[in-house]
Length: 348
Image (cartoon, rainbow, N blue to C red):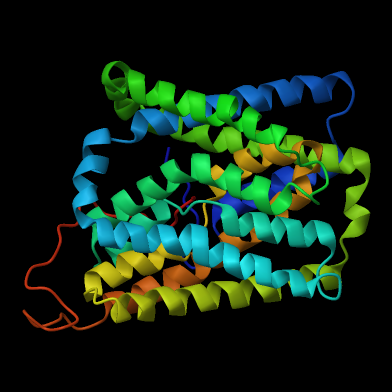
């Protein structure tokens, strides 16, 4: 049988459609009572297993080799965990005129989430950028985010976020960091198995995230929190996120130039420094916000789809740029190797 493929002309990530379908399912058939306890337990186990796989897949050797390009990685980390949160804090002025308190808290949480890995690599490759740097930058961001994101959330959201407490940081250590470290320690023995069966384990990744979404939105439906969100507020949220993404794309591109990076490095900085990871953010929100996670992840889900659509256009335009001359200020004498062909649709 021929494998069904999402039409290339369709501007919506098919995985986002699955996420929206999961939200719809939670709205129609939310888990309640005993079923809610079962789903919650399954979600907890799925999150732990997900971060165990992240630990297994991250090559320690590649991460150490990537430290040679430390200026680029510090730039990406600064964009992800300093510049983004500053804009998130500044957005507090939009509450309550444009955003409700729960939506603002979700927006602020969005700015604290680590960068993506797969989509940063794919877009950097399409645009003929520094792919090895994108691989390391995304990996470093995800690794640092396991520790930094909960700490930033505790400092910025702990005082007024409904359902959030500093005890959540302890939970995230045991539910996310411990499985990740276990994956790193066991990588020597199980890394080969995970690599050989990545086509099978890939749906496990995505299925785990769908389960997290279903659990979070089921709890939201049971508490009736959706009455807090109106279409006008959603449009306002989309507008704020569009401005945030545009500012970060411009800042990472021209900021990279001001710091003296060449074209290939600037491409990696732009795609790794302007995006946020749905795969990391959803499980973290589930642990940090508990029963109030549904509204906390809504801004992240919307931003995720927006960043994929916009960055896909930018990457294709960058791919049509003329090759820089050897020794030119904005180029390099030799191109960085591009390993493999990226997919047009990226899920993280």
